[in-house]
Image (cartoon, rainbow over all chains, first blue to last red; front, top):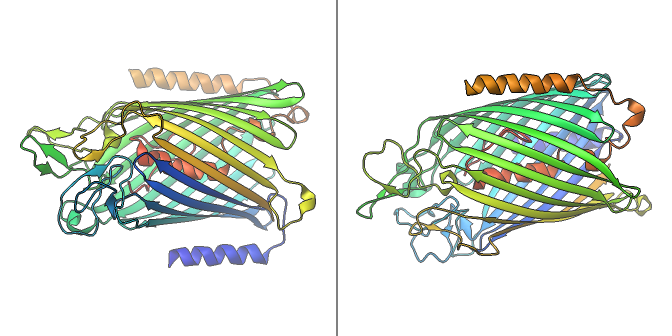
Length: 399
Length: 71
């Protein structure tokens, strides 16, 4: 119902107002695949449209179709009934709880697709003097999970627009409703409140820097029941997590531009540090080199290194004296490495309004050292050259 | 103690930013080019913000706050 309301409102707004500079429609289609035969197809679109003086609306919609690794349908090729997924490890609609989980997503031996959808509608007010305020509503639905989130934010430019201070706040009202017999082990409401503060500063005509701080508090039913822990006698114990998690993340970014001949390029470096009350800490370093190949085309190469420690109670086996326990591989220590390339280009304006003005294509290749219980999860083979690949194709229209 | 040091460092960094020399409007042509933007394109941010939290134990802190992920 909410989704229909958001959709109707966005379409009405699109039709009712004249076109302005900055109005555009962006689309992207993502294909994710991993070596466990998990495939996810994700079309996503965004519409930005001026609706009145200083006001614009943003409407975003996303659909995910996942197969080969679905919480709903289980893990492909596991030979179990029901087979379970490794990224999440979930059983199908069966009433028994037998196991083999996929570490990254979970898979269907039946070739079924699990669908997830989300949409966001936002309003932005822009002041010509450099102030921006926005508010949005977000809703998503998966087969065992619902989320609803209002969010507000804003920014203020000052110092001849060389300095920008930004802020944001969002609140999530989520509910997990596990499948079948899993509902006996867990499920319930989850609340997330997140606040962020950012600062951006231009330093020279070819360099700028930024800082972002985010604090997040999560309460309620935080995990899900699909990650049981093995006992010493080969039994299974349901995951049991604290009902509160506080997290802090700080990010620092530096962008340095340069010229290769007459063509502008830049190196964008970002470092992010994260810590939470479950003793999980992570470091993320992302470096992107973007280079104009012509006035209308850009090549971007990126590298991302991620490392995290494990949560205090992440464990494959329960010894019997732990208060909290989870076998969710996302909470184990691991490292991941991503390399990616993206090409984007403008298309001739003479092609007309019905054809896109811009397009882009990209591919990201990721390897990671998954850790966990191989009897329960489909883990990636060590040193495999192919683990996860993500390809995207995007088109953008001026409307 | 660590938090105090971190706080002082942040205040120092912020103060040093706001004291920087101004880049005048006429000199901002390069800064407005897409390759000089801090964030990736909007939908790329949406997809990354959806994907990484599904596979990693930490969320939030860069392009947007995490939450609402059913994984």
